[in-house]
Length: 119
Image 1 (cartoon, rainbow, N blue to C red):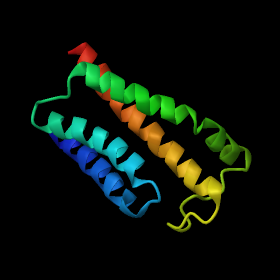
Image 2 (cartoon, helix red, strand yellow):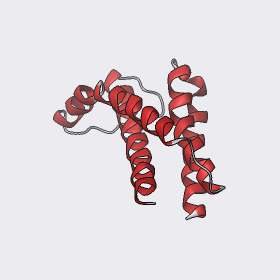
Image 3 (cartoon, rainbow, N blue to C red):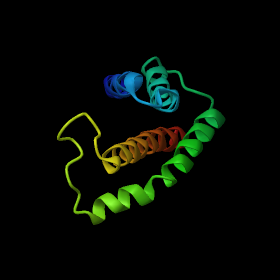
């Protein structure tokens, strides 16, 4: 399990690093960094306090709700490619990517919450 946790930590560190040139890195680096921190701690058998994990996940989940209309519109458009180029020259590309990124955060943090509840 440590290898999986390390892999997830590194992926989210990469996500955070890619936000450096984003117009709003002050939002995205902490979000992706939070996920990376929880999984990075798990590599060493440690973890964030449960209340911090729940609060962080809740904040990210609430933020995700604001992206649902954008992701829904992308689906209604027939799910055109959001990966043709790294430059988000159409607004729905950036908003859909951000919404899906938040969804990944909530899913991976939710998995940690579920595992910690069972333990």
